[in-house]
Length: 468
Image: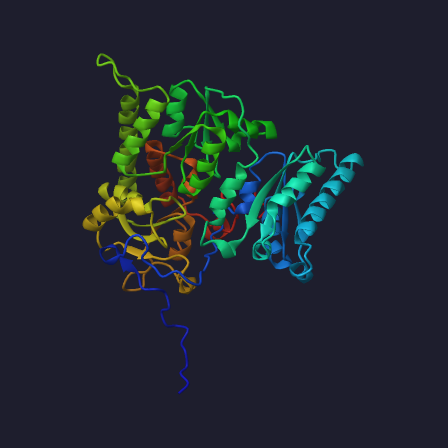
């Protein structure tokens, strides 16, 4: 019997409550939906961080559309080229040859434009990022042979292996693979003991963050790829004896650099658990030579922590007085550890009612157990479940009236359909108690000043230039 389907039926996935959540992976992973919140960076945005670099994408024309549009929206089309693959390339045995000849053709055309002075601002790139696609992986393409031959042909250019292979995401995420490629051209150099490298973030590191303040207290300088204006500035990463990373997605890249440079790597993830945050900052203080062993003197790091905590928690109390019991929704693109953030806000009296995430970091379990005791009825929704495409219908009470809500993160703002949201991605470059203080200030601003949600979240790459 044929049944007429009603489009009015509620097809949104049933929310899981914290009390019934299977931590850390509560949802089935299958066919995925991507909400139209575009602030998270992709491989094109990340590759553009290398100064004086050029990107070459070698893939099918359908795949080229997205990356080309990203570069166009960034107003950076001059830094991108492509080689379109043909069906015959899959069986004619010339896959590597096509990459080499296509890339060489692009370089020669750039040379012609420079020599003709068609564009006086144009320079030959010092680094070329070559992106191979799924087709090359299926073919077993020899990437090393490609870069070796191109390096011999153009010794003044560094060629970096990059990948656009979403079909392989079960082994390593595209973002993690791109983080490896981002630093691949850097070589070990003579050590500069006064330099500390902040790595792994797409966004500029907040120079007022707790980590940066401790580095400044030690008298050392900071290397941040977002501050690099030349390729030579970028290569100075190879002189830093200490690297610090904020995001777990950079772990694989940092492990490789630690082996290549024979330096030290400190993993300081963006946490909101006070005990873990304190431990990381104290450890960093010791590595920077700031630990004070004299009983007659105040510990400089502890004094800094005490001051930072007072400011952070004071700012939260101020925000709570303004925001009151307004429902708060948080998504994973805003911060990696949103359960810890939800616990912190709940302890300070905020009304956190909903989380949007497809899974959680395993080392967030302690916070999860505590939050489940504090507020077991917090709802958790996936973000990539296909039926979530019906979810952006607002937040209403039992009588159908619209409830003012405050979202933290672009995806939460989209799914809740609210104009009141904190526009932030990947922690916004912030870290520590200064991040708590600044987030509290951003929450007040978001609560008092509505945004044009559709316009804001449609811009690709939070913090990047956009032609929209």
